Image 1 (tube, protein in one colour):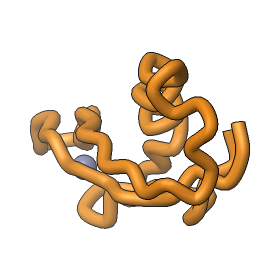
Image 2: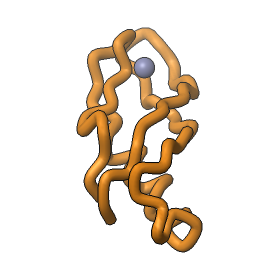
Image 3: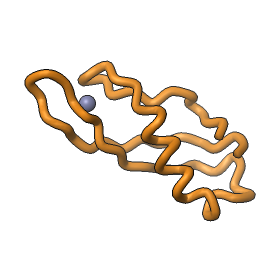
Image 4: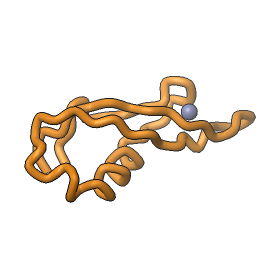
Length: 66
Ligand SMILES: [Zn+2]
């Protein structure tokens, strides 16, 4: 899926969570069909880093194409 923005990062841990966002969207693919240009909001779990536990955070973006 082509998304805007293309990358989704946890600023706290400097982790690239794009894959998790893509996974969430893939699960919803039927709902996203024909929805190019539609904004989405997903909640993913950042695995955290040394000394900090996982946490959830939400991202918004736009589906450009499937
Ligand atoms: Zn994080």
